[in-house]
Length: 174
Image 1 (cartoon, helix red, strand yellow):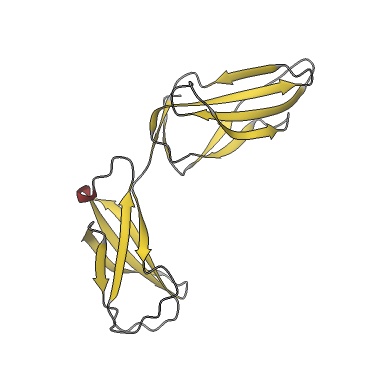
Image 2: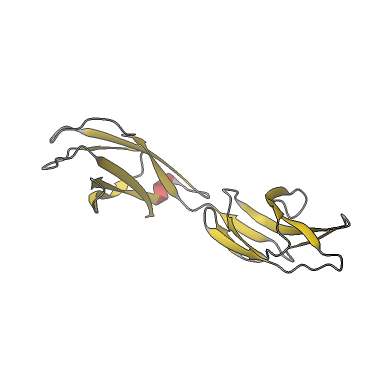
């Protein structure tokens, strides 16, 4: 407990469990409301598994908890939960809306790039956008940096010849 985790990151959950009759199976549960309600992260884990690589959900919270439940061969259930709450924040991200694949572009032809950005309490004016392109799975090249986060930019490529152009949008704290 007490940590701040980033949504989408992988967090290693570790625990110990034992029982005189032997553990049959285990489950991991997650709560975003301080332990009032739980959802299943993983179930039917083996008796010998004591760690789990958890992808932190897109769930902004200041009251996250993890609960481990073990069931023995006599169907007795025991559980333990995080001693303290943890926070999850959603880092800013941007997603390309257009071009979205399959379009044909020609040298000197304007390309309208559109995106959306979001994240934990993101205020678009507090972030700028860096646009990059990639030809034929090569290195990423800059189109523009520090672009206003207004969701659109028109790019006129020059000297580019490829049937496989990818566009990447990155939100950067201004």
